[in-house]
Length: 413
Image 1 (cartoon, rainbow, N blue to C red):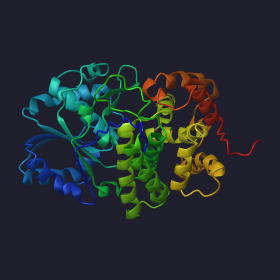
Image 2 (cartoon, one colour):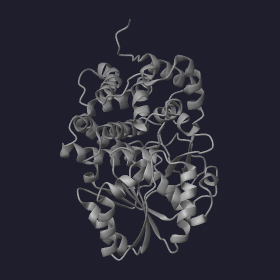
Image 3 (cartoon, helix red, strand yellow):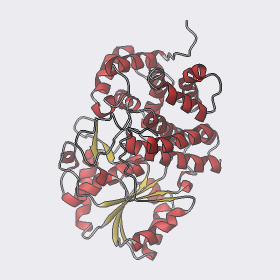
Image 4 (tube, helix red, strand yellow):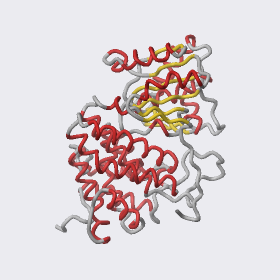
């Protein structure tokens, strides 16, 4: 605890968490007065699994009417949101809630539709809109992966159809009213998705644990900030998530049938989301967005390749926090030694997940590093939250070290 903590904590009002809790959602929605909803998902869940049918049966038994939209896909675009809005508006008179079933992409699309189906406006019109809070339909999020944490965060990330860059719409009105964390949804996740989602959860936990302090965070005069810096409460969730990832992430990647590890990672993902959904993130995501723009590789993998090198850049300014992370990840030794070993341990996890551990192997050419730096710096909310004095120089050094695959603990050549 710090006496200077300036805590603003905003999380889903209700959380259902545990194996089988999805069957309690219909009765809860009816109890809360909901009557007609939209289920946003994709064709895998509507055609290749029984989960959509299961939800519809539970909802119908509770007296709820539900319209299904199953055209979600990875990295949803602003154009998809706008076309879905045009397609659905005529069917949704009287809608009072939206249920998102799927990974982070389906939840992001559902969040955007919570705005556009209410207003009829294109989603791009919200990107720079400061007239908040937005008027949004209530959202219920049911994640089927253990990683993104979208079920606890205030924003949606979409690809701008005009220029293929990612844009964010942020407001606390987009935080789900109910988060349903049923680990059973993750039991059949493919190995690659399991690894990418899991390293995303670990990134969220670590990055939010070491981000800018709440009493220094630049929230301006916003009385209802989406992100407001780390504080004692956010760090409690982050530490629990780091410990769970350290115990279960590699285990679940090696053996997807390990149900204890599946449950552990589902919990880790949500706890990490409760941390970063309040405190925010910084350089890992800031640079990873730029890496994704050049490589078009998955969000989890782009975070993974950057995470060790960002941690290495914080040895001086966040040594006490790195020591705590080391202990949570099971590292033992003198404080000076284990602080240096944190980034190496994280890099070993990334390697174990079959993700490249440097930008050269990831597909970034040396002559692209200046472009990568320029693009990363443009993500100002993440750049500004990086807790070092010279942020631009730090970003430059991180990117160069990440390209070479060079950590402070590596033997000198």
